[in-house]
Length: 295
Image 1 (spheres, rainbow, N blue to C red):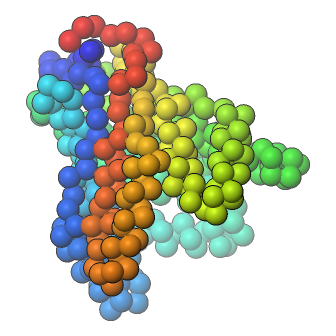
Image 2: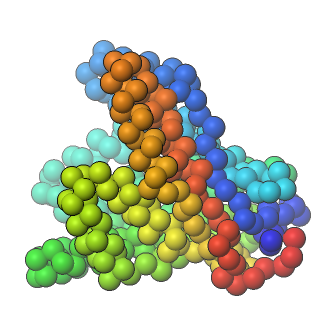
C-alpha cells in the first residue's frame, strides 16, 4: 500500500476505487422533469438537461481508499454556458463546412472537464484542466483519416489509441501539490486490432451473445493500459475489474425486467449500468509501476 500526499498534509492511499451511489428514484426525478421541459421548449432546454444530468452523475461519484478517505466530485457547468458554446460551435462548423469541428469538440471537452472539480476528506480542492487545442485535434484527426483511407480502415485501432493518448496527454489534475497529476496511455493499435478480430468472430459465432463480453474487453483495454502519474513520479496502475459474465447478467436481466414492467425498470437498469462501469475501476490495485512510500 502507498500514499499520495495532499497539499493540506493528509494522504490518500492506494489501491482505491471509484463508487457510484446514485439511485433509480433520484435519476427518475432528474430525467423525467428535464425531458418534459425539453418537450415544452421544443428541445431548447436540452443543454440545461445535459448539465443537470452531468451534475447528478458527478455528485454521485466518489473515489475511496481503504482508510476511509474520499474524494467527492461535482460539476459546476450551467445550461446557458453550454447553450452558447453549442450554438456558436455548430454555426461555425456549418459555415466552415466542417473545418471548425475539431475546435468545437475541444471547446466541449474543456467545458465538461474544467467545470468538474473534487474535494478530499481533508478539504483539499481538486481541479482539472484540458490543454489540448483545436489545431492539435485537427492535425491528429486529419492524419488519422488519411491513414485509415489509405489502409482501407485497417488503421482504425491505431487511430482510436492515438485519440485516447492525445486526450490523456492534455488532461491535468491539480490536487494542490504544485505539479499536476497526469495520465498516460500505453495501449497499441496492434493489441486493439487483435482484440477486435477475436471478439468480432466470437460475437458472430454466438449470434451476438458475446457482445457483452466484447464491451467489457473494450473497457478493460482502455483502463488496463492507463497509468496515473503522480507529482512525486509514482506510476499507479489502473485496472477494470468487471467481467463479461457480470455485465451480461445485468444486461439480460435488465432487458427482461424492462419488458415485464413496460419500461418502469429502465431507471434502475440505467443506474446498474453506470455502477458497473464506475465501481470496477481500481487505481493502484494491480501494482505500483514505481513504488511509493509505505502508508
